Image 1 (cartoon, rainbow, N blue to C red):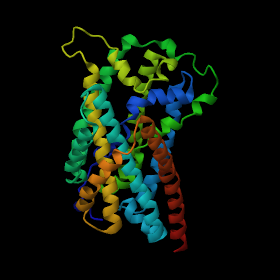
Image 2 (cartoon, rainbow, N blue to C red):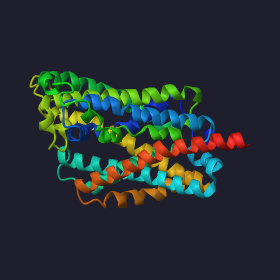
Image 3 (tube, rainbow, N blue to C red):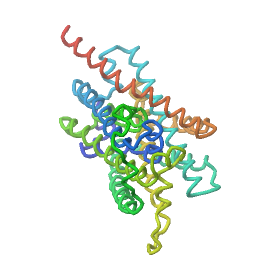
Length: 362
């Protein structure tokens, strides 16, 4: 694959893409899912443990990528396991990115309709985001990375502002006692591992990096920064609302922000400001997932990527309208996350092992 066909990105841009892929719906739902899984104030410890999973996955993936420089997974897997298995694995991977796209865009539409634009048809919101994503990804990976560079600092700034404003509601007792029920609960890390998925995009974007020797640094920062932001969110929400207080809340982070009272500020609805930035982050997640799925079809069948970008657009819209409620939507996300753990945790290990064996035999 020639990089010039799709563009090039710097290691910094690659890091931002990974972070943007990771930070999405989990910001709103992680406190609830983590509280339900762990059931103790030690959710922050469980989050730190769970961050080791994507970190390990990432280092395995870049080790595999570095054996086939300048090629994406869709291209080099053919050299390892042949055409048939490549099609099988790659189609599952494409399906994973498609489901990730429709989940993010549908959740975005539901939240916006509920909190920002009440009464606006969900279909309109979905079409708008998908069309904007299409407009972005047609420009290639370089255009995607540049837009993400604009969104990223806004996201960091928003997190810092919200954390500072939440100090007044924070109660340290809600995070005590530490390990009061022993160490076993903190290993219930399933939901937090799912929220950390995003590192898998390195299978695609490392081929476009200008300096692939910095891939380890990209992985480390791509896991560290989302972990810190998720940890900040988790501690602030649990610290303000308590474990019992968040277990039955669909969007606990939004409720916390709505609790802020600063009448002296000109901008009083801080939840609206937060959601505007969050929508940008969801847009980033949708765009890179949409691009990864389109690129997969393009490289598998050796056709121009634009025909798959335009072809996937109506399919994504139709699929995003299938879930009838949030319960079905979250079930779909959980199922996709389970598939993702196998695809990006187990499959790269097997391919790396096969690659080593094939090289030794030759």
